[in-house]
Length: 61
Image 1 (cartoon, rainbow, N blue to C red):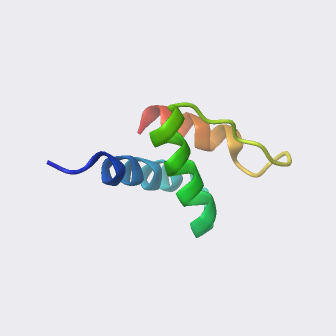
Image 2: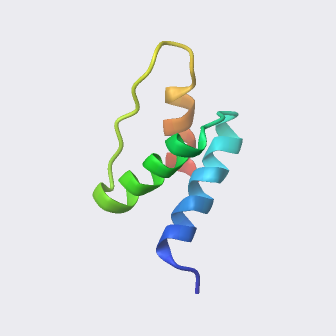
């Protein structure tokens, strides 16, 4: 059985592919750490960068 961090990492990677969103290494690590620690996520950024697409893909992944 895979560890929880590796499962969440795979889930995030799958969501990024589905949403066609590219995250930097730091953004990816922070997103995974936040999901593991708090189970919620606030995505901030300028319009048109894929926040809603990423949120929807995370919900579906």
